[in-house]
Every structure is written in C-alpha cells, then in structure tokens.
Length: 358
Image 1: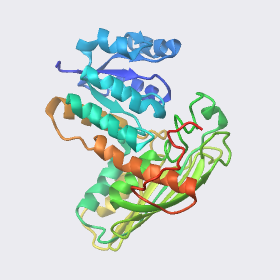
Image 2: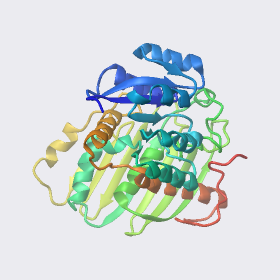
Image 3: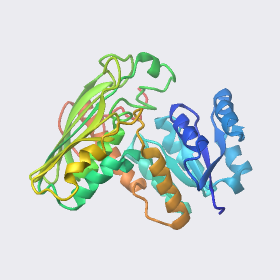
C-alpha cells in the first residue's frame, strides 16, 4: 500500500461529480483517483479527462488492468444495481464504498455483506450526514445523556426535483432500480432518525406521486414507533417548489430540544437544554452555516474516515450491518405504503414493490 490510496469510481453519473470535485480539489491528502468507469463512454471520458486518468466501460477490465493501483472501489451506479456491482467487485479483494441506499432489498444487502466478509474486505455504506459538524455535536449531547428520556424525533426533506431530473436517466423513480423519495433523497435523514432514536419497532406510512411522472412516490409521510417509546415523524418530498427548502432533524427529550436545519441537516437552529453546560450559548452561532447544496459538507469527512479505516484499521462507523439498519426501516415504510396498514419491523411476507420490477 502506498502513502496515497487509489480510488476508482464505478458509475459516472450525478453523484460522481461530487466525488470528482473532492479529488480534483485535492481535499484528500492520502487518496488519489486512478480510474473511472461507466457504460456511457462519453460520460466516463469526460470525467476521466478532468483528472487525466483512464476511462473504462467495463469495470471488470478496469479492476484487472489497474489492480495494482486500486485500494478502494466506489459504487456510484443506480440504486437497484448497487448490490450486483458490489458483489461482482468483491472477488477483486479491494475495499468497497457504496452510495446510498446500499440496496433496495434486505436480501440483497445480506448478500453484499456476505460477499465482502467472505474475502476479508471492508464494506462502507455512505452516510455522510453523520459527519456533519452539527450532527456530531448532537451525537455528543446524546451520548452524554443530556436529553434524558427521548420523546420525539422529526426529519423533514423538502427538496425540489423537477421532471427534468427524473428524465435524466430511465431508472430514476422506478421500483426496480430506484424507488421514490424515501429510498433515495430521504435515505440519509431516515438513517439519522434511527441513529438517534434507536431501534424502530413499527411504522405507518403513506406516499404518492404528487408532481413527478414516476412509478414510485415523490411525496410521503411516516410515523415510526421506537422500542424506547419515542415517536419518529418522517416528512419527505421532492415536490417543493420553486427550490430546495430544507433537510432538517429535530430531537426532543425530557431535558432538552435540538433542531438542525439547512439543506442537509448542516445548520443548528435551536439548542436548548434544561441543564446548560459551558459553551451551549455559542453553539447556534458556531454551527449556523448552511451548505451550498443538498450534499452538505460530509463527504470529505466520510472519505477521510474510510482512508483511516483502511490504512490504520480504525473501526467503521457505517459498515454493511450498520447500513442495513436504515434500509430495514425504509423497506418497512414501503411495505406499509403497499398494505395501507401499520407494519412491524422485521415483517414477513412482502408486498412492497421496492427493488422489484412491475
């Protein structure tokens, strides 16, 4: 292993541009981009040209020809193919990063975990919002027990996605390869809610396509019951007009309340506790910056964490098993939408269309 890990991108679509920017601006002193791959040759070539690296249309050839340079492969393809691509990449023995959601079914998630475990490589699931500075501050307060008994948590994803967004690729908004706002745009916020409130035991959800012409939902709401008695509320839509409004998270407990707003849960709006500690009065001012877009600031910190885990063996905050937790809640949300009833987490027979062709 060299002093800089070699990364490759499998998929050069919308999210790959975020990764491209991070590498191009040299935010990561211990990583470099060594190759990219996409079925669309022109798209791969355009991204590769920016970095003066090879472009491929077959990731198998990329992994074989550049094997000695590669340490980590980033799966940035359409959601419905994450599992297939991660499983096919595993035998090459390189650590794998998978963008959200890790898969569309729990069966696929389990296969991914097994494939990586069988060859002794790390599987990282991208949950970059956990690395936002306000989220870290909130986690610190939670771990210190400052909230006492948890009462309620609410997350709101009020983003704007016009029809042109869904029309960029044929897989967007489909049941087989994407799902709707819960599986895609709100998946990070669903993850944050369960990370703070604990183990969910049941959920009731409704959703529909309000403005977008897609198979799945662009708007929905869910009420989640957690095993500690707390209630979670998820409001998610891409039908906000004319532009993005918020990606927020609120936690309410018997001893305190925190509200984090911004586009990507990246700006503290309220920080109030029954028992103040030194520094509380400066928190809102210190963490008030809103990110320039819905990606927030967390990807750089997340990739630094991956580098540390690979190079130094530090534990992964979001491995396959941890990533599976929020996917289990997402699949239960879709099961409730399909049945019109409250669903117990870990339900049996599945009527959800998520990850399945119509």
